Structures are given as structure tokens and as C-alpha cells.
Image (cartoon, rainbow, N blue to C red):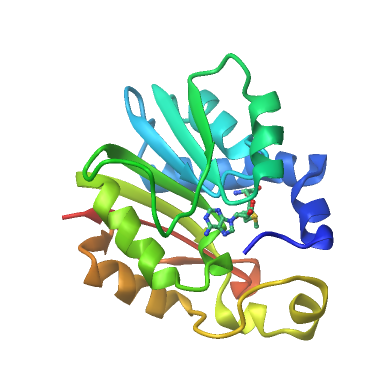
Length: 198
Ligand SMILES: C[S@@+](CC[C@H](N)C(=O)[O-])C[C@H]1O[C@@H](n2cnc3c(N)ncnc32)[C@H](O)[C@@H]1O
């Protein structure tokens, strides 16, 4: 699902970018166990492209492919990433436009909770990762999406949401096994983790 105007404003602002650069980048870098040098990294639901910038500049990826369902977000990302080794497109995580086994690392900066058939998106991520490839994820659990504030101010699918343990179980069903325990952040408002394809 595309973002409504309130969540779009929450995503497309300098505070969010600073948080991604200073906090979330450090979480993912530690979960990845170091740099992603020489890798082809896929960012799903790239929004305005701050995540792809981090993947190149902080994680050292060789090249990034990135897509978003929302063409307005992709236009913003194109402006931000002009001249960088990033291939941007409009696309759906439930039908990823990549060959099977083509990707070294997939990065999810908080998009799978926006996908109605999120289990299909996990199947697609597992398909495009090479054996031994890594998924880095940051997600919002069902109990947060069910709060009055989130339900009132934002648009998310209401049915078929997940808690961290259900997310991990779905990853494992597709051969993506946690590299460690899923970590809770901000009192359980977010969870982050990494999983490797067997
Ligand atoms: C919460 S925003 C996060 C954006 C960006 N990753 C960030 O951290 O700033 C979720 C993004 O996922 C995109 N999105 C939602 N459903 C999607 C889908 N099925 N496939 C690809 N992108 C999707 C939305 O358009 C939005 O840009």
C-alpha cells in the first residue's frame, strides 16, 4: 500500500533521514557483521532513496537496485541518487523484477508491514537471494499497527499482520534463518534482525 499524506510527510523529512543515517544504519551494519563490499544489494520499498545512499556510503555496496510501489517516491529517489551506481524502478515486492539467486543482500527499511500479502513478499525475497545471501529487516509489529494513533493517522492493511515471532517463522519457512535473536527497539514499537538464506 502507498503511504497517506501524513506518513509520507513523516518519511520525507530531514529528521527521518538523520535517524536512518545515525541510528538504523548502525543497527544494520552490526547485524550484517561488517561491510557489504563488492555486493549487489536490493533495497525494497526504497522511498526517497536515503536507504540506498546508506547502503552505498556506509555499507560499501558495489551497486544497489532499489524500487518502490509509489512512482512519486521513485522520482524523489532518482533526484537524490543521480549519478550513483543505483538502478531505480517502480515495482512491487510481491513480484520482484530480479532473476532468482541474483542478490547478495536485501535491505528492508520498514516496508513489509505495508504489504497486504506479506507472506508472498517473503517468498519473493527468498527467491531473489543467492544461497548464503542476507536479509536485513526493520519492521512494525501488529500491536503497534493496532494502536489508535497508527490506525487513525496512517493507512496500513488491517488484516493478516505479524508479530516478530510470526515474521521469523515465515522467514524460516522460506529457508531464511535468523543470524541471532530479533531485537526489540523503542519498547517494542519496532523490531530489527538479520536472516541468511540456507
Ligand atoms: C514506511 S515507508 C519506508 C520508506 C523508506 N524505506 C524509508 O525508510 O524511508 C514504506 C515504503 O514502502 C513502499 N511500499 C509499500 N508497499 C510496497 C510494495 N508492495 N512494494 C514496494 N514498495 C512498497 C511505500 O510506497 C513506501 O515508500
